[in-house]
Length: 401
Image 1 (cartoon, rainbow, N blue to C red):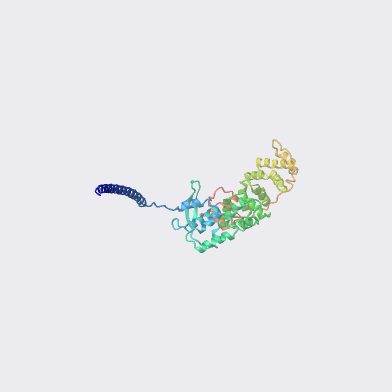
Image 2: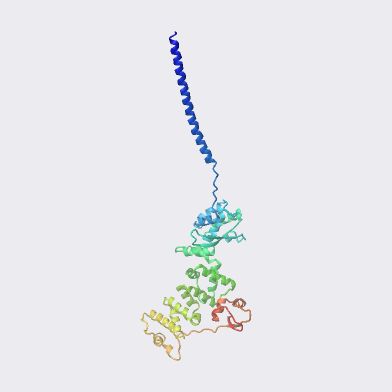
């Protein structure tokens, strides 16, 4: 009994020491665990407490640049977007602006001609190569946007006159008849068609359209603006209109000029444009042959005589006379012109023009005179051989009746 007691006491001491060591280790492990947990929480707390960085949305200019590259259909889809951008405008306002500016959407027709607010905004492309002014339309109502969307969905060609012109230029043959009919109803085409409806030779719509497409939109727009100021339907206006296209080397313009204003061209067209006309008249027709012969028996310059003779030799399949000899050319093509009795096989009878005379007074200018007599400024300058619009008092101007 006495022997077992010391052993029991010894074992109890060891057990106590083991328990103390185990407790110390457990406490140490817990301390280490708590330390790392607190470190992670502190890091997370520090991250969450960092000040938030503000991210600004796109500006009007940025969004316009992005929208300017979108197709017509892609922009139509964005007419539903109402997210605010800048200065009270939302995304769909900028999409509509790009529809009007870059795709010539006819917003006036879509809204039935109602007056709408318009604001101008400067626009430049990303690389700065293109700068222009765009229109923005503030405070359009939901009903107006609905009308715009319905117009775009129902109309096959919902474009302005300019847009229709560009659509025809881009179109592949055969051109959609509906597109042509829509353009024929524009005021721009109607102005041209009305001018040529007074010509001696009729010109159909398709021929006039072909002529217009050989030019550009600013030419047509300029003509319409001139006709707004003075409704000039005279032969002189037709001539000046065709000469603009003649300068672009339009063979169709040359043909129409000769067919519609033959007598005027023979008598009043200057030598420079006569030479250009002869160059562009490549088709052998009785009218072109007659024109060349008339030039040969008129007191034109050597350059015109020579060009007209080359045209006749070309039609006859013969080599031209070299060096040029006017008398030999007449002997070959118009022998009767060498006699005293006959001047030309088909003499041109040009009725003497009817003129009114206006004496320039102090304060007069071409604009006032043209408005008074209902003629164009171009006609006055052409008839009176004016090189500028300056007038001196006392000068007499011829006014076409």
